Length: 337
Image 1: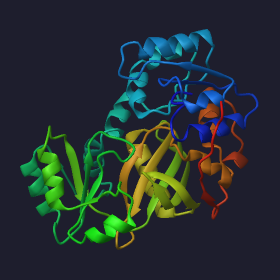
Image 2: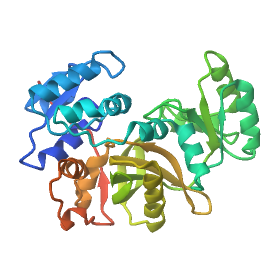
Image 3: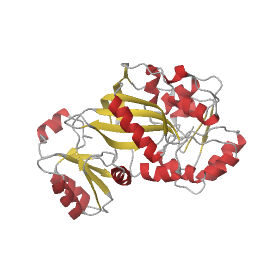
């Protein structure tokens, strides 16, 4: 398992340890990753952008006779997928989507365009590369009468995401919200975007309805399990309270996305409802989501299922039967060393 220091690593380790036949080795670019204290074996590796990343990971797979490699870090996905055959030759399975699928799923703008071309509904959006295009996009999307939002085409963990509205109460933001609020006024957004290099941005309508995080297991475009959970409370983009709900329209919508993109393994999909109740896509995490361990409460161990699927280990019908209506809360814990 890579990303042993990721926010959700502890929960995913717990999922994998549910199977006594699994021996889990953790790796991370950070030598102080918390996962090393939760695993019997841990090694450091280069960052995904470094030239030695693939050779280092491959070497560990060969030395330790690794049967399956489960990546938790978004930036590792495409480098790993591009060397799929090398890992296969080493006897290591990669339960991730193809490079072509990942290049679309990891780019929010390309993803919206891809789905729009295939008549799968997405929020109203524009892709912009300049401040002037940003202004035009905002106007075309109905701003200032309507609230809009923007985020970089390539990012993760809510980095760069902001909601623009003229209905902001500055005093309320100051005293009732933490300093990391995502709400911003247009003049503030323009000042920030004009101050340095302008990244490609996805500007879209803001969906005001409930938000759902959907944990999925896919097999080369076939949906094996789709598990929606209402996001009741979030901290910095991470679900800390929620409820598993059987929402058929969300399940069908995500199934279409999985099929069109030919996604594989553990996949996370974020959707939100419009004012009229329609569910529309926010983004895709084509990997194990950090909060996927919450699914244990619904009787589903998705990381274990992804590994078993990849290794050809039989999955029983009971392992695919979620307990709907389960609520969960997550909390911080500590390790001492």
